[in-house]
Image 1 (spheres, rainbow, N blue to C red):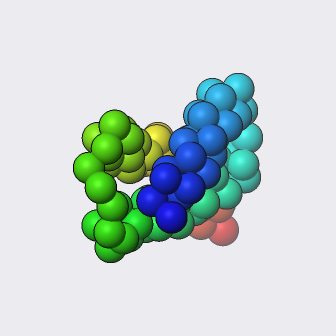
Image 2 (cartoon, helix red, strand yellow):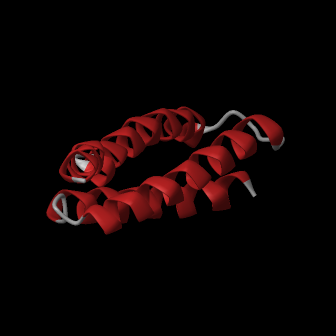
Length: 95
């Protein structure tokens, strides 16, 4: 299970980062990816710390990918939710 989840999360991570980079202006996509990443982070840490596994070559990569995914989710959250408070503030100011 450890190896399987690692490879699923690794493939998702690569697809996610590439898509994120080319669609920075698509706020809906960035928000969606943020929440998918939150799920991936929870699953990643749960599997890393909760599943028995031998220390192997991917052990270090797995935990590194989990931590880097937190940074990616934060960046996606920024691009997905930026400007929303300003738009909301302007809407109330116009009323």
